[in-house]
Amino acid sequence: MNLSTSNATALIRARGLTKTFGSRTAVDAINFDVRDGEFFGFLGPNGAGKTTTMRMIAGVSPRTAGTLEILGSDPDTDGPRIRGQLGVVHQQETLDQELTVRENLLIFGRFFGIERKEIAERADQLLELFQLSDRAKDQVEPLSGGMKRRLSIARSLINAPRVLMLDEPTTGLDPQARHLLWDALQRLKRSGTTIVLTTHYMDEAEQLCDRLVVMDQAKIVAEGSPRQLIEEHASREVLELRFPEGTSRISKETLDGIGDRYERLAERVIIGCENGEAAHARALEHGLTPESWLVRRSSLEDVFLRLTGRSLDE
Amino acid sequence: MIASIAPRALSVFERNVFVYRRQWLMIATGFFEPLFFLLGIGFGVGGVIGTLPYNGVEVPYAAFVAPALLASAAMNGAIFDSTFNVFYKLKYARVYDAILATPVSVGDLAVGELLWSNLRGVIYAVAFLIVMFAFGLVASPLALLTPFAVIFIGFAFGAAGFALTTHLRSWKDFDFIFIILTPLFLFSATFYPVEIYPGALRYVVELSPLTRGTHLIRSLCFGDLNLLMLVDIGFLALIGLLGYRHAVSRLGKLLLK
Ligand SMILES: Nc1ncnc2c1ncn2[C@@H]1O[C@H](COP(=O)(O)OP(=O)(O)O)[C@@H](O)[C@H]1O
Ligand SMILES: [Mg+2]
Image 1 (cartoon, chains in turn blue, green):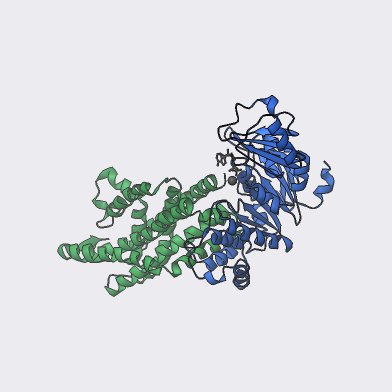
Image 2: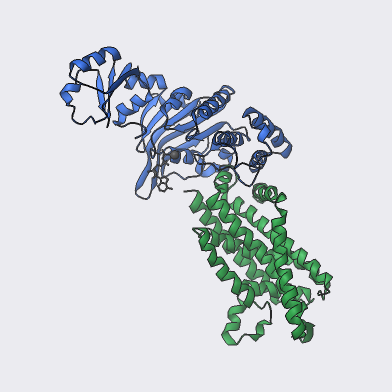
């Protein structure tokens, strides 16, 4: 890894970044760089340490060890200046229920010390951009989940941040709301905003991220673009065999040689291979009788499975 | 330093202005409680008692009680905001989590909230002072200084209430606050002179922050400038400072972990 070349444009740079809560290590000596203008992701299951990492970056959680540099400064000593250039969307809703939709943007701008007139103009643009203009005068509470999330993102952009930080922005949204949000984020990225996102959805990471790190149990286990990660850690295709009565009685010998590698989950066997159809034929030759089967291209889910032996939503 | 912190603290204050622009009736309700006490106790009980010796002069009972009610109105205004409203924002609505993602610090946050809770105390005090004028209960033009003097009362109770609130776990814990406030209101030389208490008990009551606040306001309303008023101010400011420092350190522990 050539660190010196990637440093030149790194907006966020972490080395040996560590956070412990009592005896529990939430983030364990991780290294990463987020470059100017990129869409960077932390992919990992619940409890991997994603939120803790985001909080350290946002300067609301002092690190236990390691170095962290954000826009050239240390969040421990330069918190207010750094936060002035970040936009943060928390995993849990933090919209102000006592204010209307538009007031949420107006007052947030004031926290950043922006002039009222400028805030008002920007607020109206953002409401337009996130399709919330007709709800401007409404209270926050009756908004749908998708609208609230869009409002949270609009609010986090009121200070025109250099870096937008999104902690699991689509968790709990229905598919349509997710796609709407993905489109909005792609537009933002094209307009030059650097975006850092955490997710436990591999399709989200694959769709959005230029580069990502895979986190598991407080550590980074892989890093690269979605394509690189898949090429490096997974085979071209995947054959999934489903056994509703369980996979524990299937012997290792039966599974060997069907594909390049396999992972055994509770009710599924996942076989990485060059050609899924051919692997399926071999599986039948080996005497397997799955209830159902399917062949698909490898995804980040398979990368995670390969690296940790577990599935992301387990 | 003040120049850089002040605008951020003011933005936190401004948030409350946004909220209460629509809920000003909520604020108005807090004005009636001291008014009812003035009518019921000041004039009602006062009608039976008549006058009371104060600084060697006989004064109408209502005129004696009114400054204490003004002081406790300021206390209630500040306390209500720095306990109920702060708890809601801290534990329930995550308003502070959102605010701390901006350049606003926990210190700015506490200052902004205390400014607001103090304003609320001042509003009640001014409204009550007008009532006192209307009923002819003001003996001295120095009473016009009470809206400034209640800032110390609001600071002491606002900050102490804020500090206490950071330790509360659920809405049920608010019973504690009432357990403290009711005797504070009743026994802090509100309805009778502090000299009535026997021996050591008197000195305990003298240390009640509301006794100090009441003494400060009563002295002004009767135009009786005395050195003990400096002790009142110093004592209230000290409680305010300790409360503020504790609140800020607790906010840091709770929100910046
Ligand atoms: N304030 C805290 N106190 C104690 N443990 C915490 C705290 N915050 C997070 N943790 C622990 O740190 C680990 C990582 O949590 P988190 O960063 O929230 O993970 P993720 O966002 O990836 O789901 C978990 O084991 C969690 O229980
Ligand atoms: Mg999380």
